[in-house]
Image (cartoon, rainbow, N blue to C red; front, side):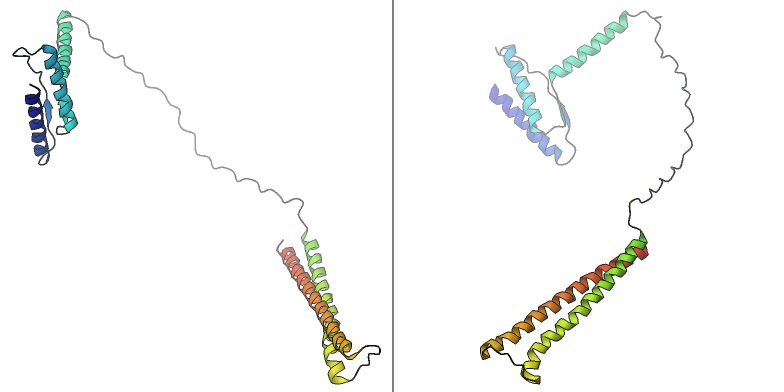
Length: 217
C-alpha cells in the first residue's frame, strides 16, 4: 500500500514540474484515502497526511488543500446555514450608526522664523592693539637684522683679513693654534649672525600677521 501511494505522489510531483515549465503552478486538492481490504482507518489517515506533506514539499503546486481543510470549511458553512435558518424572516438587521463629521480648525498661517541675534564678540583683542604689536614686531625684526650685520662682517673678516689682507700678530700662540683661532672666531660669528637673522625673520613674520589681523578686524 505504501509503495502504491509513494508512486502516486511522485507521479503527481512530476506532473506538477512538467506543467510549471509552461504555465504557472496549479492548485490541487488532496482527498482522503479510503480504508479498504482490511486497512485500518487510522493508517489511511496517516497515509493521507503523508501524501499532503510530500505534495507541499515538492513545490510543484502553488497550493495544496488537504481533506481536513475541506471538511473544516464545509462544516463552517453548514453551521452558518443552520444559524441563518433559525432566524425569523422579519428579524431586524443592525445598521451602522451615522458618523457626524468632525469639525477641524483651520491650519495656522505659516510663520517665518526670526533671524537669530548675532552675539557680539566679547573679550577680543582690539584692532589698535594688534596694529601696535605688529609694528613693534616689524621693528624688532629689523633691529635683529641690523645686529646680524656686524656678526656677518666678523665672520668674513676672521678668515680673509689675517690671511689675505695683512698679518695680525698673535703673541703666545703657535702656528697651529693661530690657524685654529681665526676659523673658530669665524664660525662663532657666523652662527651668531645666522641666529640673529632667524630671530629677525620670526619677529617680522609675527609683526606682519598682527598688522594684517588688525586691519581685517
